[in-house]
Amino acid sequence: MLDAGSARERLAAHVEQTIEFVHEKILPTYSGKKLLLYDEGRAVRSFDFEWTRLWEKAITLYLRSAGRLSGPDVETYLSDPAHASILKELQNDLRAQIETFTVPLLEDFETPGDDFLLYTYTRMVATDEKTTIDDIAGAGLTPPERIEAFFGMFGLLIEATRAKQQGSMDRAYSFLLDASHLIGMHESARYVMKFSPEVAKKRRAQLNSEKSREQVKKAKLRVCELFNELRPTSADGKPQRWKKANDAAHAVWGALEKEAYADGGRAPDISDRTVLSLCQKLHKRDKNGGVFHIRVEVVERLPDGTEGKVVSD
Image 1 (cartoon, rainbow, N blue to C red):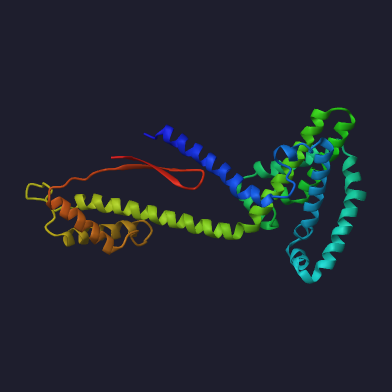
Image 2: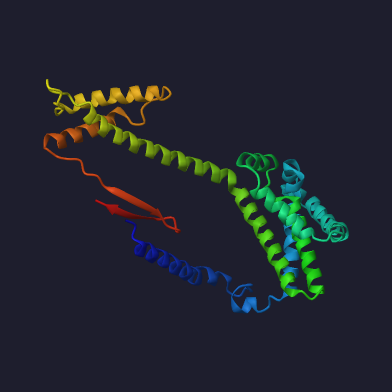
């Protein structure tokens, strides 16, 4: 059985160690800087402060995404330091366009923020896996990185202003929360997509490695089974001990080859040398009158990436 008490202790230790790490290692690096966190930072975060902060954040992210939204060729061109002046000019034009065209356009609609937030969210959750992968691969952008998500950010802040003007501060704050949420979705997606090719490559290698190890474990178990199943028999049909480990290994390997060939014409998931080594161990134990001993091991993956094991012998 899993030891729930032990798991809770490990979780509590992980929480304590992380907070301790933040206070001892991370916070000192912000010495002399103003944080929007903790009592001092949160004291200044009024509605107007947060609205302005989120508005500038949304515009900044939009301007940074100018190249990506225009396609890979334009993105590559604008990312070249030699074209920095062109990028700057484009960003200035885009900022002016937001203020003189995009915002007035969105203001003509009753619920622009809610509509574009729902549109973005639906594109994330309402499509099948293949469609989602094809969509992201084709555009190189996730839903929170697309132009509609930016319209959602601007629209939600427009609705927040309207609610405040109507004296409905609860609704006004709800729009701020959703705008912050959508901005956070964009930043998270942008961060992941930046490293996605390398992450996918490494993850695929890890999964293949884990799959390979699992296949070897199954193959070793099959060796043990065949070691017993293929034992020589006496005249009356009773199983006998193998005279030599080599004989057992030869028979087991032959059976593994036949099974692998029948399963798509592939090679066994284990080498003949490993089969021989296992058969030698089994033969020695068998000759000494030993018995198989089964041990069940449950491995729990902890939040910090380490493993906790519960063993039943």
